[in-house]
Amino acid sequence: MWRSINIVTLIVTLILRLLASSQLVNGMRFDLETGATKCITEDIKINAMTVGKYSVVKPVEGFPLSEDDRITVRVTSPHGNNYHYADHKESGNFAFTAGEAGDYMACFWTPKQSPEKSLSIDFEWKSGLAAKDWSKVAKKGQVEMMELELKKLYDSVTMVHEEMFNLRAREEMTQHLMRSTNAKMATFSFFSLVICLSVAALQLWHLKAFFQRKKLI
Image 1 (cartoon, rainbow, N blue to C red):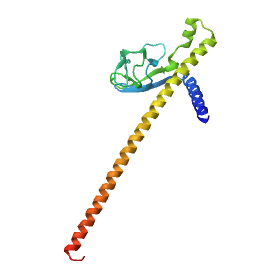
Image 2: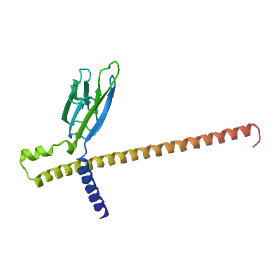
Image 3: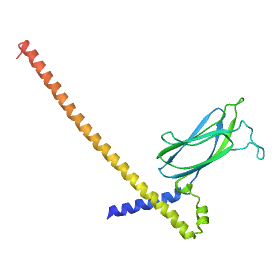
Image 4: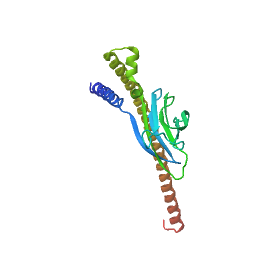
């Protein structure tokens, strides 16, 4: 009974966390020195949708950027596969479905200038539920608000289901590692005991032979 309650509590907690995190967006503004590189990582699950957009902040609003104040952007997967590349751009965006699970990396760099200067960059990166534009879904399908909420809840439950499988797989890996470690420790302890007993027997034999040569025994 208590196990069932714990499972239900876990599911509810995961749903609440996912519903809360679905509203979060990795939006930021950072400075990039000319001639330097800055990389940002995002942990994305396999088959998850992810979108991002970036732009160089204009020093003076209403005036265009100079040709030198452009950036190069590359987004790569955990295995080094390119998902997005843009060269000498003022702004841009990307969107893709993750084919691998792990840390995806978005790197920004700009050519070196003399004198050196700093560029401010706005960057927004969303993945999972946050990457879906629910207003477009509702407008396109002409669905009611309740149906839209059900769609969100269905996606949340699907993610909870996948997360539970991931947790179970991690638990199995941990148990396998613990069993393997215990077996190795038992083997190591056995051989250590054999070596200690062998050394003790060798020392006893050596002392006995020494005393016999000295005719002490």
